[in-house]
Length: 150
Length: 86
Image (cartoon, rainbow over all chains, first blue to last red; front, side):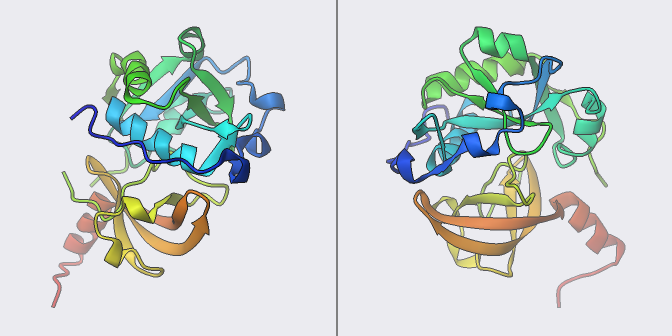
């Protein structure tokens, strides 16, 4: 199914909401004590690309369309278990990746929205980068034991 | 696996904790109407949400939704109540 996602014409970033207005740290830098990011499944490139396109239609970053996916940061006060039970309460599976691994692979990690939310920004909006990002998470994919279920 | 009315990223909410997507992503745009319940999220872990607003944005018509719960949670609640549609 990879490659089925079509990238639409994106709006002029000048008229989008700047994500800079939604940073919860100075400059949006991930806190130094944020070691891990958590993402709900499915961990698939095409799904990541769909989310990144949606973001790029709504937000700008440094004057360009922002192609990103939402994640949550494991932080003091926000251990993994709390994130799984709250932010990811409707996800049956999840995966994690170290912040440094993402940055080493040229994905920016920005503290956006409300703590502990963050965005992982793709260098380029496309299936190659989305699949490369998914690959960084995929090996850690696990069942969410904290999911609300029947 | 469920057939969604409109997909969205349940992990990526707005500042009011609402789910959102663009109307042109909907498989069933006719049911994506303010006040309606829709099945959204991802086909693997669908959720039910109420459409609370549809606004024009530069990127398209943006659908804002309030999460009600997981589709399986709702199905279980209805089953527990022995509810069947008339």
